Length: 424
Ligand code: AMP
Ligand code: GLY
Image (cartoon, rainbow, N blue to C red; front, side, top):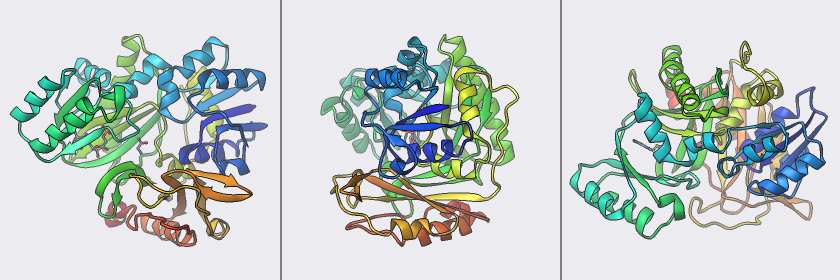
């Protein structure tokens, strides 16, 4: 099989790493890829959002299956475009990707089908939104409805913060058209977990549970980022809560999407807030999580390719996935200053020494090759991922590997997985 992976972050490096191990694969392409992906796939200089160019490439190269990493091309309708051209592709079509692309749509679906979530109000008029937040009690969460690269949800401890958040989203329009509509919802207490499943329109095949750390500094403090680290399994997702997530969240959502005439095919990711036996959905994503995919795929023992193919063009009925019982843990190394502004093109040292650590894999995110050297290119630069008999062991190995890597200003959290380690 000839496979094309769309994207160029840590998630896509992990997808390429896993797909390249499949005996079914004869050639692997990645668009645009990164310096790490270049060692296992043919990187093609096409951006993930260039849907028409990607479609032409897939046709010319006789690609058998395209796997889409990021949300932006899904929301732009890459899947509709490929299917119309008779090309097999893994991911939801444009109508189904609305579950991530529009929080207004997602919250409406939850309300209509009784899927547990935070209660909310939706606004298109800034004056009405401001009047509402001034008249209610804090804390609350103010969210841009559209895609905002993971930065559009603002947790507001006070009413003044909520006023400022509405102004940022709707008045100064920090997130552009993503802020045409705003969702104001109750602040939920609890611990977050990521619940992902492969879906073929009807059947739901859950992946192992995982958890990520969104805040930039140790102790989950500082601004939210795309994700500073992740691990799997997630001890908080007990077998009982796993079943509850399937019964109350995943199956009802897949049935609801089919009933709405938007059958969901691809990867469905529920961000859950768990408080004792209570479970609510914070958000849905229409794609694999980043960085959760890095530890998840290190634990996956089954061949990923038939699973992706079944979700895309066949049936997942009767399919199973086997998992390494060990824990995998990923430490994200970022450019100094991220998620604010940061420097680029800094040479990275120690990559080979880190890769030599047994049970560790260095997934690249924002890297590129410059005159044969690997340099930084993005905010999230690397995801150092390791396996261990338990969370403490995986954490130890990941940090042994991470400490071998350097560039000026490098930042990473020293406490990834502390909840899982503490639960032992
Ligand atoms: P979202 O993009 O909606 O997933 O929000 C990003 C992050 O903001 C989540 O992962 C949570 O950490 C936090 N968050 C979002 N909604 C809520 C909520 N209703 N209550 C508490 N925290 C929230
Ligand atoms: N790690 C959170 C996300 O992928 O959205």
